[in-house]
Amino acid sequence: MPATLRLTREPRPFPIELRRGRFEILVDGERVGSLANHDAVEAQIESGRHEVTLRKGRYSSRTRTFEATGGEVVDFRCTGTTVWFIFLASIMKPDLAICLRRA
Image 1 (cartoon, one colour):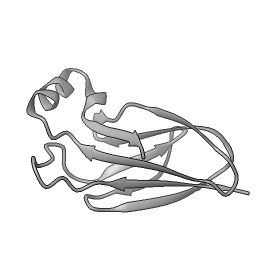
Image 2 (cartoon, helix red, strand yellow; image 1 turned 90 degrees about the vertical axis):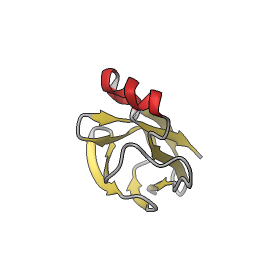
Image 3 (cartoon, one colour; image 1 turned 30 degrees about the vertical axis):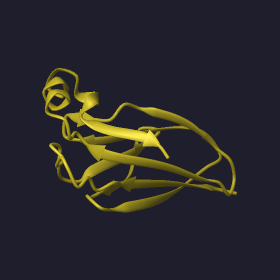
Image 4 (cartoon, one colour; image 1 turned 135 degrees about the horizontal axis):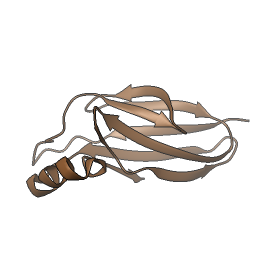
């Protein structure tokens, strides 16, 4: 029985997102969709250990590893950079550009 991976892009009223546009969703290195602002996306995944990453051009989130069991819904929330000094740091360390966390 497959599990479900749900990604939600949280709107931030203040401050604004400094990394904008659609984020590409990668599960185990394979593209499974994209995520716009104020969007939620679900993808069916097999049971087991997986990695999820979000990308926008050369910028990305840190890779998150998780276990999924059949019938389970695994939730993650994300947002683009909202703090200017992290935005600047992401120029040198691109995996700081998108915040991805387990809900």
